[in-house]
Length: 114
Length: 115
Image (cartoon, rainbow over all chains, first blue to last red):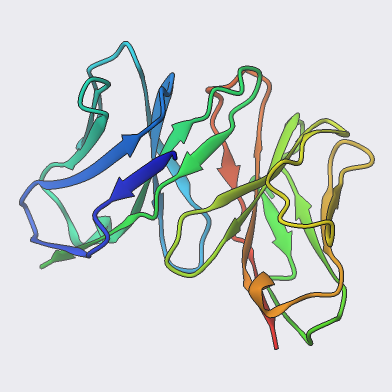
């Protein structure tokens, strides 16, 4: 069966360090993968999309890698700040073709400690 | 407003009651999605509209769930005869018409509690 795994435990890191979050999947062949941020009481906010033929994508302090052989994506936040504390969700394309049908992971809660 | 809005933000229902949840997407957005998010879980796809056409309702958990978007803008998710397992946050998202990688913009959600 299809499965998406993200670190179920919260990740605590010191301010200024690099946070690395993992998204592993099985029985998917996604054309793209996305990362979202979700704050308590709010809907997810789109951060980055990476396609299957892209190895790496960057946006400001964010970097995403996508390894279709390992079936894994890594999400990095460099020079982390307390404002980066949130839950981060990965989402995989289900290959519906004409529209964006994605399956979300359970999310990893990141806490950046001042 | 510029974003997706949902109402009510919180809804408490007694088991067996019917509820209606409203979503106002970003003006001009063709695509509209409904998701259900249980506590500690990621959002789960419920249904998808392109304009007024409901093209995918494969995620609706039972025939007690019904969604509509009659004029291709505002959408309503209706749950009949609510059960305790329906307690969750219901999220709405909209996107433009640039294809399957177009960004989805989420509303704040409606937290439904069924007693």
